[in-house]
Length: 234
Ligand code: IPE
Ligand code: IPE
Ligand code: MG
Image (cartoon, rainbow, N blue to C red):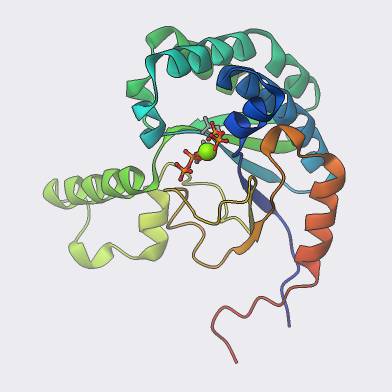
């Protein structure tokens, strides 16, 4: 039987820069609008009944952008961690962060940790924010952890299997995404959740992230329900 269960949506929120350019604004104005869109879409996703929403906010490769863009993004993040996430807290949303935290400023990491702590009992939906995240780095990190466990004698090499390896990833307790949405017309994965999306349905839309709406999300969810997931079976 086809599996129509939609428990986890992952989004690549792309197109902020092009949105800003179209409006004659600086790139960081696009990020600001995109951050507002995230708040709306998180609530909209919760309304569809999904239990997990994972969003790609900043990749490890995005550290290669200009100092000006990066500091604008980090200040926006500080501002959001201070106030705008309040709205999500009130909506019973649990917030967790995945990625290379050590690359972020200490004050930001402290705010992230505090938010995770404050929302850890929220049950409405889990919002997993991929920040300074790269999937290959995550997989290498998991491989190192597995090697350490073997070196310490806690496990034998033959104990390493898909299930235990998944648990060593940053996403350890989160089920794999059923659906991945990328906005802005690009049709690539850009180092996002490579292990976890092995059997996810993919959806690409030309809409730039700041223009993405609840209505479009609902349409994509409807489209997902028409798909047949075969997982290799005949
Ligand atoms: C996505 O929008 C947000 C981040 C990667 C931080 P972009 O900034 O990549 O926007 P485009 O792709 O240049 O339009
Ligand atoms: C992917 O978008 C990362 C995020 C949306 C945070 P990019 O804009 O960085 O991806 P590429 O460079 O077009 O592949
Ligand atoms: Mg982009």
